[in-house]
Amino acid sequence: MLFGILVVVFIILCIKEACEPTLPASYHNNWKLEAEDSQKVREGKMTQRQFNKNMNNGKYR
Image (tube, rainbow, N blue to C red):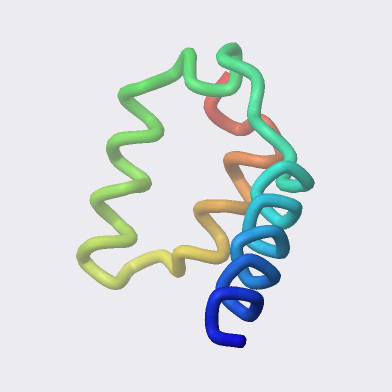
C-alpha cells in the first residue's frame, strides 16, 4: 500500500517537473544586473516573486 502511494507521488512530481518552463540561456546574459537584483532579494529590498517575474520577462538579456 505504502509503495503504491510513493509511486503515485513520484509520478506526480515527475510530471510537475516536466511541465515547468525553462528559461533560455540568453536570459542570463546580463549577469551583473542579475547579481545586483539577487543581492536585493537577499537584503529584502526586492521580493523573490518580483525577481522571478523579471527573469521570466527577460530583464537580464
